[in-house]
Amino acid sequence: MEFELTASMMCANYGNLEKEVRDLETGGIDSFHIDIMDGRYVPNFAMSLNDMRYIASATKKPLDVHLMIEHPNNHIGLFLHNLRPGDTVYIHPEAEYHPSTTLQKIIDAKMIPGIAINPGTSVETVMEMLRIVKKVLVMSVNPGSAGQMYLPYVGHKFTKLLAMKQEMDFELYWDGACSADKILEYAPKGVKGFVLGTTLLFGKGRPYGETIQNIRNLKF
Image 1 (cartoon, one colour):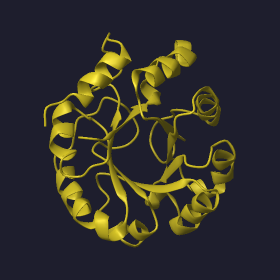
Image 2 (cartoon, rainbow, N blue to C red):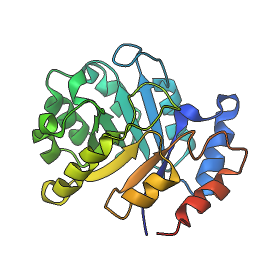
Image 3 (spheres, rainbow, N blue to C red):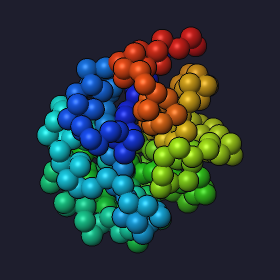
């Protein structure tokens, strides 16, 4: 079964980021997930514009940029200028007065437009945007930090979105507390990709390539 795996780079070893990117790329990761946090929309600071710019220069793999910032429209040009056509940019609809305007700028820059849906955000409140975006990133934990516990009620949200994705032409992605059992359950249902952080990929004392291959060899 084919599904995408993306590395949550806020969990990487910043003592040698060049090696982290190279080892993940050699190990077979599909893309690099870049969490940008401003300390306002979420109670944490994470990766920066410079981190994103460096990773974009260090790999030819796609980037998935997750903007956990207030009013992304005010700064979207800075990010788009340092990305490449085909990279993905996710925004949180609650963080913007007019999210469709920001999404259109992403589209005009030839990036892939996406929205990220928090655990407390209902599908009904983002219905119109589902017809605009190509990717929907469902947060299975509250945004802002790694290593959180999975929130079981999010499973109902996946069920709703999976029933809509073909009609509205978007793909569904999982972010947060992504364990092997979640991939085993949701990849066959139609979830396209999974963001890998400390639950499966980072801090395990094993080569990234071995871990990634083990995930791809899961018995469905």
